[in-house]
Image (cartoon, rainbow, N blue to C red; front, side, top):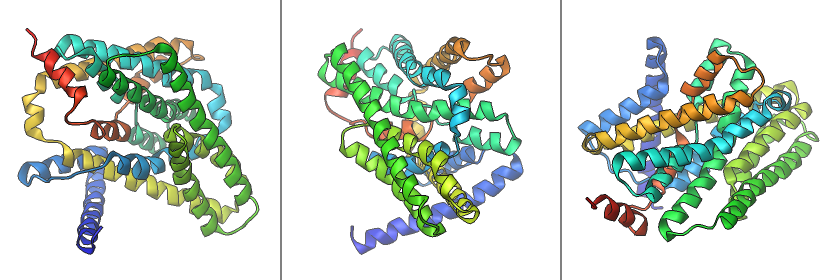
Length: 368
């Protein structure tokens, strides 16, 4: 990267940080989620001064997602997770698969697109990202169990959704699918990511317990968050699930070996890192959306929204009957708290604009 490009990137980051600061203050005074304000600001910028922003999905997945996932996983206690672990697992694995299939079928029926393409879309939007909801929960003092249910589902379904997305893209591109190889690949990628995260989380936690340097210990958690993702991806397994496992292990074992000062430094650092990553993601969502394209495809978009809402209802209200006395009001909150964010954006940006994948969709849509 040339020096001129570095200056351009630096200017963009500084202006973005300033915009984020102003929007957050204004949103809190108006009692609105600041993420909504960031998307609206991004849309306004593209409307009056269109920008050509080329964003690599690797930037989002490798740079912005790990802080969000690690920070959320770091705060989850094993004891809290154990109580509803099987329900969270149901929502994160069968729930994602059910959402992918149901959304794919409904969108195919409503838009006329090839089922192979709509299944890719179903996998793309199956991961939830309720960062704004969780922040609101913490501010309002919502029940801890409800927070764990929402965060736990989001953390584990991120990795599941990415694996499903890869499988659906392969099906759409090749036109063939083997259930045996698909299931084997799913288990290998997901399970491998969890194993990598657990091992690295235990290793770093042991190292942290033997030193008393707040800045070094904070640095080691950074190495763990980003390193677990990179190592897992280099091994061909799920980097996101590796970060989830590493965060949970380190969040439960690491603080035991930390001094009170170190805990404050670590917690404040990751809260700030997650806030910045989340802010950039939602601002980028607004900056990369073209309003003319949205208006031109409003019918298909409306049908897709309806499909996602229906699939979410089937997943939450259907699978939650296996939970331990989940109040009906909590089910409503889980339903509406299933927002989409960073993972869906990264996966959408990774789709090819041309090639075999979309030629299938165009050919099918042109049929009477």
